[in-house]
Length: 225
Image (cartoon, rainbow, N blue to C red; front, side, top):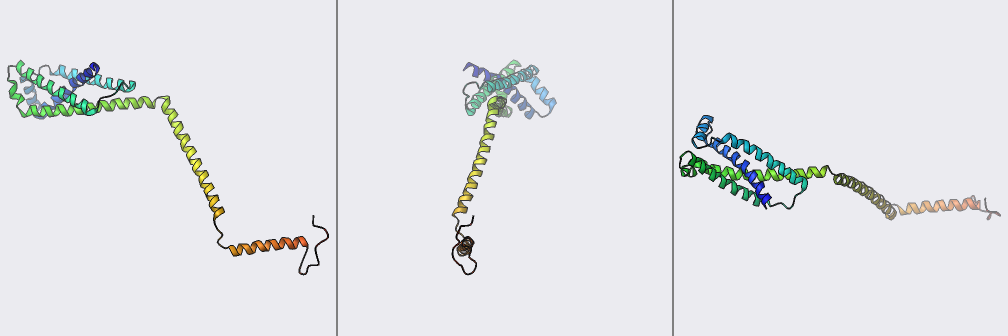
């Protein structure tokens, strides 16, 4: 439980800064105005916050890769994880903005009741959901990569090929057998002609054996060798 909270805290630290930066970039598109707004609202620590966000983001990705390789324990559902992370980011974002305003002697309610704060809340939720999906994708990808590099995958490929070859051979044998059975059971299209041909061949054999040509003089005294 503590490990899960620590992971969420690391992700939240990076997510808050990302959403925070996006909020001010959208609220103040002009870089000059944005710089003045950040300076006037107690954001002198911003370069350090960006560096911390980079470190936390890299740590979150590394932990996701590690969990994927280790297949560590049951995973919480995506909606539950996203809801927890989004709630934490929104609360920390609100606290952070309040402390920033108080640090420069401004009233926090002026910002907390503004459209920029509402946009910031929406961005915090969006970044939290995106972070959960991204980290889960990294974890699953690491697990699949580990499986692809293992002997179990190679054995699975060999078995799949063997089963495919056996299936093709079996189907071929069944096909040939079915054709032969069908040919044996198929009725003749011209039974009278075949019967006459068989009778003619039989008569020829008998005539040859008896040595009869036209009018027979009787059976031979000895059977032909």
